[in-house]
Image (cartoon, rainbow, N blue to C red; front, top):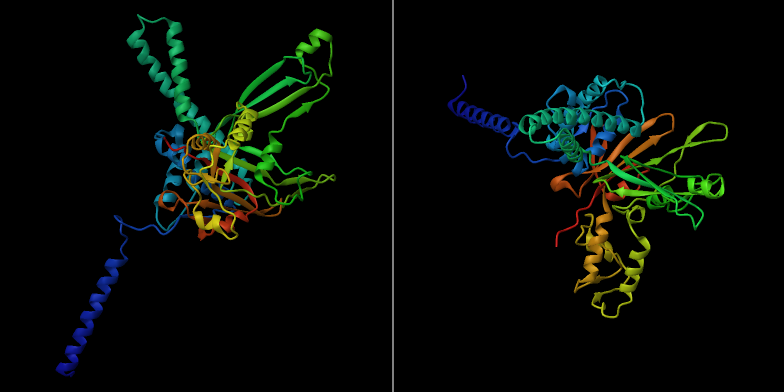
Length: 447
């Protein structure tokens, strides 16, 4: 038989073990009230579905798109895709340390007739076009349902006092207003102007069209260029183009010319809250074979698109800025010329905010017209939110996305590679071979 001392020792050990198991049990239970988030969620690869995971991660990094989905009421079957996309996007930043699945989003697309096959590689940009087409279709149904209900109420209330034309106009205005409220933040509007190349001719025609992605190309002239920037690709995309062998209607009617030429110029008519840029990576050889364009494109954390806006007098703005820089009264500034890493130490690793953006090479103390000028310029600035990269060949490869977090993790960058999510420095992001760039329009602070 064991002695009393050994019995006492065993009892103490048993009590300690029980207390230890109780402590582990209590501390290992999930805390649903004040749980601290350690990082973003990943997405399962359901069979070559990295392109879908990369796109969803990129869209989830854009605050305006997340808030747009949050405001939408997606209850009925006619908005099944928006409902599943909304749930997944919100869960990516709300759920903690889990791996989610885009299966329900894929099934919602199937219900619209899209063939999203597992095990088959697809293009990320083409999938975004599918997303945009589907949510526009569902939003159209939503607007039609709301307007049909609202029109019945209008007829019941004011059928005797208002004409049919007034009711139709009111319905049209309400539909336009509702469409504006429900419009996806990635949708902007481009203006395209075609005018006669003859200087004395006054012919001019302007048309507007909606756009969700700006496609830019690395042309043969730009391939192999050192320090190729995304601004260079945008400038090449929006450059004026001369259409030879054509004439305007006025020249044809006035003098019968058929080769006076036309000048085509495009630009942003309405900037979107979320700007998505696609860099074409597919090239073609004279033999007809395709190849992947491997050139690196530099992109900054802030993008200024003022030079690509259509309704804006660029020459007047530049002349005003040059005149103000020569004004002798504006000498209250801080300058420096010391070598070192002063610019990095001033801002650290966090991206600059509008209050600290280096709009010029100097900063004023007294403010005045300098502040007003730079606040106006800030209306054209975008902040980088995510970068989707394609690794591999043109015929086969893998997609991944570098993205920012939301909320308190706004200045933290993550590499999302299907289910694997890793925190990375911005230097890693800047070295990516960008295929899709996701930007968010920066807010201008109120004065």
